[in-house]
Length: 249
Image (cartoon, rainbow, N blue to C red; front, top):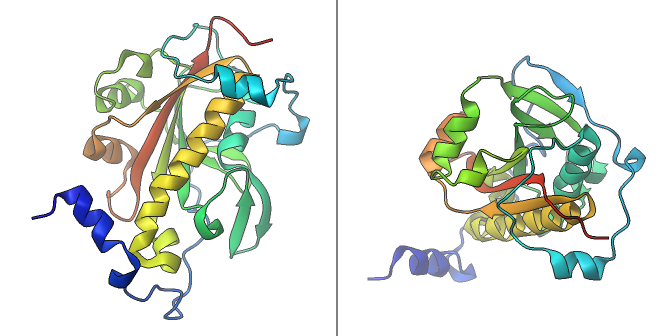
């Protein structure tokens, strides 16, 4: 009997795929989920207006590493705006159909939503937000005082996950991908997550921040915290961000 991972690889090969929703003429899912709740919405500084220190790409790649120790210094709203733009920023939208972003995605499906746990950002109240990439703003999801601890626990008590300035949580909306690629689209979700997180690592090098990707987390607990059902939307990847002690010059 094949193990689960082997079975996944086998059954997502082309000979096993059923016709996709696109092939059957089913309307595609929306390119972005609706704005959550009636909480505060924060307009982020326009990416083009944010001044980013120059850093050589070779140096950014050379010095990129997972950093688990951060200063208590907050990151600025400009820096957060830049990092979110690096990971899911919209360069162009074909209204209602697809978007071109700062990261690659299979078929330009961009099946992620980005949640941002703010612990220490200048001018932003701590809490859980969602990044609305098309409008480039933050929408408040929860201001619950204990939400940082809940996410820390769901990240299996990794200490840096509660001593950071920001935790970025990517969730996948699989229908957005499988509409075109059937069950093989699940493979592409995980590939795309890597693209987004690597951009975060490289962008962080330019603004004196460190990043540590988190793949070890309690899936059910994380989905529950975000109010997700774990099927039509689920947490796929997490990253801690904070100011580092030294800066590349």
